[in-house]
Length: 491
Ligand code: NAD
Image (tube, rainbow, N blue to C red):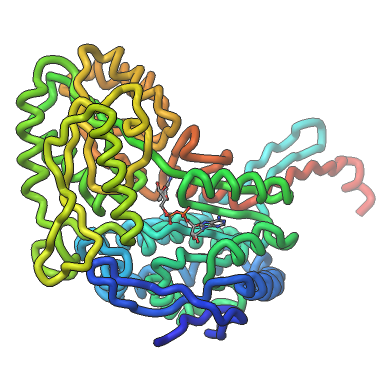
């Protein structure tokens, strides 16, 4: 079985680590590859930093217009290879082929947005701030940047950072999730075809050891992390303690309010897509569905119908809308959480446990599940599930609903379905979350906007994507110059 290589200094090289972890198809437990996993992956990461530091020397002085040229080529290569990349995402991550393709498309949009860096990076200039004195601010690269990404969007999340880091003059090291490294292996085959200095973009495998090496290496100046809250907090603390700038996006538990004036039919379909898309393994998946007012009966019926209609199976098979969760351990964790919700008093309206998919009996499948009347003071309502499970909650007023939304320790996303502009405005103003959806089920910001999580969903100041990314990957230098008029007479 193939052991995946690192991509360092423009070449595919074997890891110094001999221990491995399996990359597994979650639909049938087939081992797809082996990935280096252990202490010596830290040495691999250190080697990548050395070459990235070297590559930086010429790249940071390359004109910005030249630095974006390889991104145009990358966009073209990603588009030409979108089916193969999407196939790999489905194989190792489990989501449906359509979901994988949509994911890669989102990644490509970030490459396109980063092509605007020559404009986005333009400096600010003030003439005559005092007599004969001009002042201006320029943006310079920060240095070697590293990204640590999670399992659930292997074809998109690295692109929240990589194209911006490169366009702004930095070098880059990616450490993908050990559960889904194949997608980026394919993308790096494409990156290898670009006209870039050796060592500018590197790929290093592993888990905690390779990450810790990146967090501790003095030449790494910026860390972009996406993953669970516990690890995001750790990354932020260790990275900033070592003097790096860090952006660390964490977990979520997203509430969604349905007002009685919402269009029930349309809402139910969109809500089901939000909860069950990517088998609920999405940091923007709606989880707590709060029905306000007297329409709960109708809403419940429509949601159960929409949930039941989701076809579950292997994501490369025709017509499949929902795949498995990532590991057998995740399946057990989600099923235990369902039991916890029931033990806390909830009624199991739709039970997706014990899902059997013909031909994929060993897959980590859970079918759409709905719990109603979950305890408002329990643990279930607060815990990130990361599986295809909906909590249906009934409240009597918008104020109560907003209180429940804001009692959430996370703040990744909050949504409302309504036909009232005033309800929408009140909610948008008061909800404590960084990404807000009005009649939208997955409020995923487009590439030109920051991915704006709050509270325990984000540690740092500047988020991924768009203008925030340009700011994160650059440091400002303010220059003040005096050119006295009298001097002209001397020449
Ligand atoms: P994870 O935190 O387990 O792993 C993420 C990355 O961190 C992986 O590359 C992993 O190898 C590394 N890692 C794991 N443990 C580590 C440790 N102790 N020290 C150093 N590095 C470590 O997350 P995951 O299970 O891959 O992804 C799911 C989580 O990511 C969910 O909580 C989800 O909400 C979150 N997520 C958040 C966003 C967002 O934008 N806020 C987006 C996608 C996923």
